[in-house]
Length: 72
Image 1: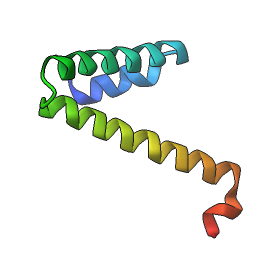
Image 2 (image 1 turned 120 degrees about the vertical axis):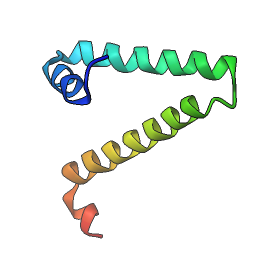
Image 3 (image 1 turned 60 degrees about the vertical axis):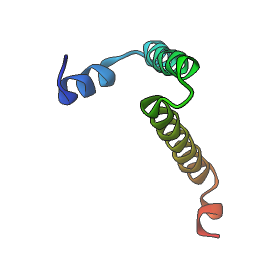
Image 4 (image 1 turned 45 degrees about the horizontal axis):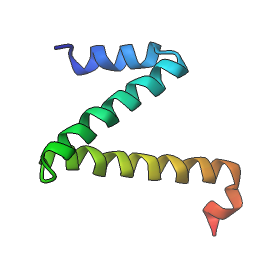
């Protein structure tokens, strides 16, 4: 298994379409785990963290597009 630093470098060097593929594969892998065991703590944590990351990214992008809303 690669180290966290090595994986970070690999992720940083991926093309946009490859990054999308990686996220899609991760989603499918954890979705399959959850289908087999709805109580799978690792899968549930993955989806909770994914939801948090998506929400934070959306808020960050919204703040960049509409900076006046960030100050409200």
